[in-house]
Image (cartoon, rainbow, N blue to C red; front, side):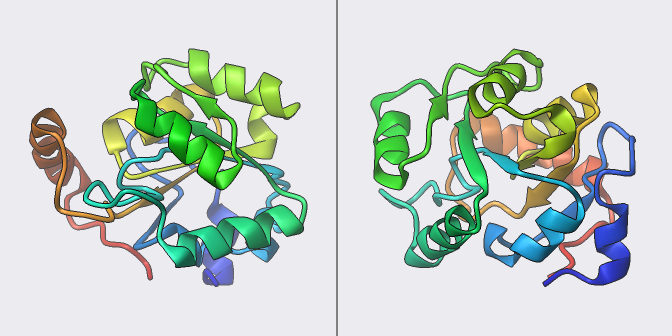
Length: 177
């Protein structure tokens, strides 16, 4: 569970390259926090957010976390820049709709997810591992966002270059938990 002081600030910051919360894993986000914030929907990146790049499928603890939040009535959409077969496999496997070829940080896919889930930007949170796509995209729309540490060191070459830039931008910010 997140500290109450931090929970109050989620969604209140508007700095484009600063997540509301920075955590080591999605599994640290709980239903109580999401309810207090009025969040009904979770828009999530896939690679290195819920599925480590060096794995074929989501870890059991992530599956349990998703199942638990679904049982609590939360809605999900996978929002990814990827368009390969594997994203649809993840969507089927987790029973979550997929918005692919998102071109994050542009707002189009986020808006498609809002329409698909029947929520507003204030009722949704973006969760991702990349500052320059997931977090910036959410910020451009004025929605809350949570950044998680990449779940694997493995990644595509251009993403590894992007991560070096992100480390400079993040500075001393470290995951809270």
